[in-house]
Image (cartoon, rainbow, N blue to C red; front, side):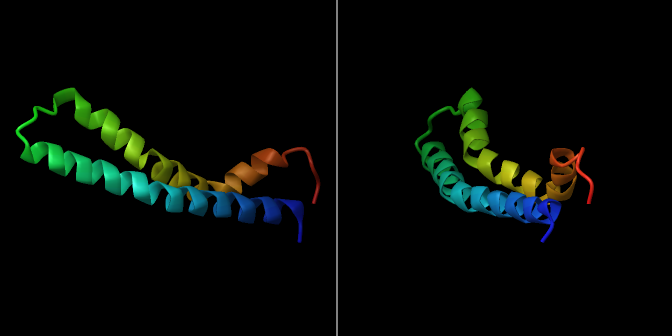
Length: 81
């Protein structure tokens, strides 16, 4: 297996790992917002940071999965095949 192919696969695995790790914070952020909205607490500016921190690992993981080939190309830019 060529180094670029291995890097491509490893970047995709890293993205899948981040998506899997991000499921719990995403669920916690949605449930906490749901609980807080039922209490009459004015969420206002508090919504965006909670959602951002909850869904950030999933977004980074999806980006890595979709951009794995260009990222591997950048990593091995000077190498010949």
